[in-house]
Length: 152
Image (tube, helix red, strand yellow):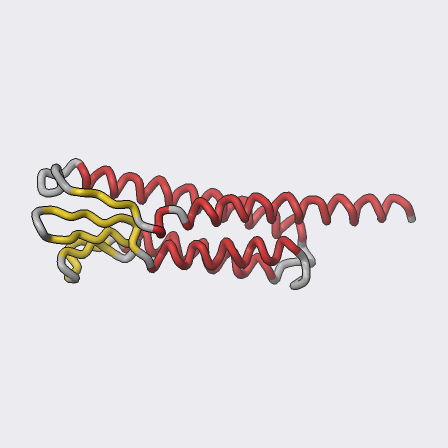
C-alpha cells in the first residue's frame, strides 16, 4: 500500500542508492590534480581513467529492487525477503567500494593524496537503515494480519 510508512522507507532507500550511484564517493587531491572516485568510474581531471561498472551495477540493482519492493505489498513475506536481499546487496556495495578505495589509496600514485569523503559514501548507510526500518514495519503488518486471522 502506498500510504504505509514502509513505503516511505523503501522510497528513501531507493533514492539514497540512486544518489550513491551517481554522486562522488571520494575525492583525492594529488599535486594539484583532482581524482574523483564515483560508482561509475575513477576520473582524473574530468576524464575517465578506470571503470568501476560493477559498483554502478550493484547500486542500480539495489535502487530498482527497493522501488520494486514497494509494489509487492500484497505479498508481505516476499517483500521482507526481497528487502533483506537488498540490504545484503547494499552491504556488498559498501564492501566492494571499500575494496576499490583501499586499492586506490595503496597505489603509489595516490600515496600522499589529500582525501575527502563525499556524500555518496553515506547514502548506502542511509539506505540500509531505512530498509531495516521497512522490514520491521512490514513484519509488524504481517503479525497484525495473522493476529486478526486468529480471531475469526
